Image (cartoon, rainbow, N blue to C red):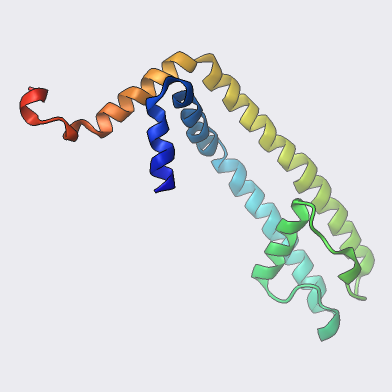
Length: 151
């Protein structure tokens, strides 16, 4: 329902190009999100393997899904460096630094660059994008007009 509400904002000239921009940004982020998922899974797997080397009470992650969530929360700045356990602590710190530099700094700044590029492209063609959204709305809802009026 909320997506439909957002979709209907394409009718208005002031919001039509913004909705188009959201769609374009999501489309442009596709490959980026795939690469980010691979890096998060790689760091998550690394943390899982190191965590499994610790005894039960010193493990900081217990399964692959939790390890990915652990690495993802690290990207967003939520991490607990006190629970790294006792096995291969220097290696965990190296992976922690690499994960924060690669994923938090490099990848998220790359995401900002992708969004900025899409914003510039859509903003340059704001009027054309607005008309394109209106035409798309007409095409999507042509069935609402009675057949005799369409003819």
